Image 1 (tube, rainbow, N blue to C red):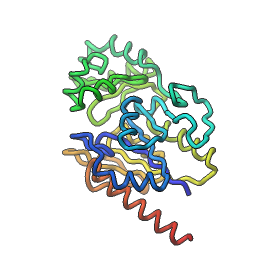
Image 2: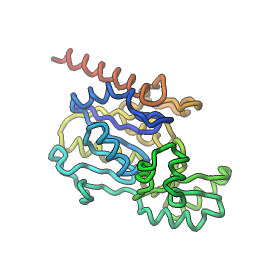
Image 3: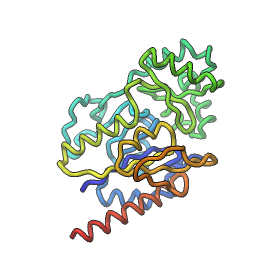
Image 4: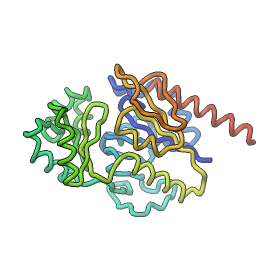
Length: 275
């Protein structure tokens, strides 16, 4: 049985306040030793995930910009990636639309709804809004599929969603920002594709785990065998119920670590009994 872990970042594997994963290090090291794929599934960009993977010393497939693109490292486990196109050192499966498409839509209606997107902000402004250091804020600006944005008048979100739908786009809500994406993309679609690639190439039965805390994580949590919901600092849990769902007791890396340790221990017990 092959275990695969899909995880959101902000407020989950990374603390919401300081973006640290230090408290999750024990679980990460166990995952690496066990050869379990840790699939980052995030609204962040390819550049941000590359940096984070280097910090964690892992090289696994990852899903960026709310399912806009799936990146498999070149030569990963000798997998055959159908529909993948070479993009730098990755086989890229594109699900989302282009960044120019989402930016052009926001430019046309931005003033009307008092919208401020990442494309309207300087690196320094993004750093101030997010708490990211300038080099990471610059990586966050390197969008390929989606646009995070702030909405000064949230009461207009329904009408804005309807206008986006007319252009085959949609809005999702993350931890800090709204996101404008292609209509056909979300984290759940991407998770399903990755899961099927592993199943076809490995020939093994899979157990999938997903960890998230925000509305844009719901499609991912709906696709996995074991959905894990983390509380949001100061807000508590998202109001959802899914079969077999686990609620982490704490937000961020500490809560993430506790749940993964528990699941790894359960897996170890099952393996011991079977042997």
